[in-house]
Image 1 (spheres, rainbow, N blue to C red):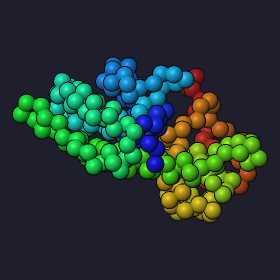
Image 2: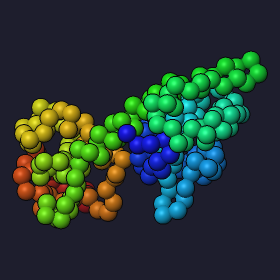
Image 3: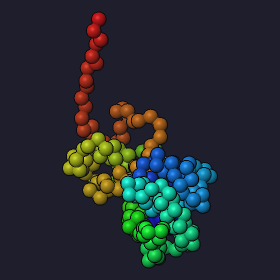
Image 4: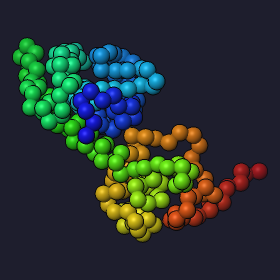
Length: 217
């Protein structure tokens, strides 16, 4: 899995933190995350270990004030900074309780959650490959010619696992799950693919034309 000290792209941090990309940008812009955990060189990046703090900040919003959440993050900052060289297994053996006046806040559940989602991100990275010899360098599921973003788009469109497997028999349920994680962590840029650009081996699941309504004269 990624090291505690690895810097994740903002879109990857959003997946690991289980928040939107907008929320990740917010914690950077509003300096909710300590500057030591953020890099703005060559794009926005966030310390992998700090994703747990992002999750905490948003998930605890209904129960804790902004001041209490920021105090907790600032208190955890020193501990996390000193643990940057540790593997995640060691990080999860640390004490992540924070005491603030009459409050006792346990960050361990957020650390465990980030650890599990980092495992998923690593598995998704390993499940995807790209080569100029395969569909011109399009990211595909490893060992296939199936574009990972097409699979994720089918999931987003509400197609069932069974239907997707009928279209791409070389996949399985776990590869479909990892494809959605990879696509979310690495969103496509530019204009959406049109039907005439479908890659080799793809099957059109539906092809329905809807006539345009004419305006009343």
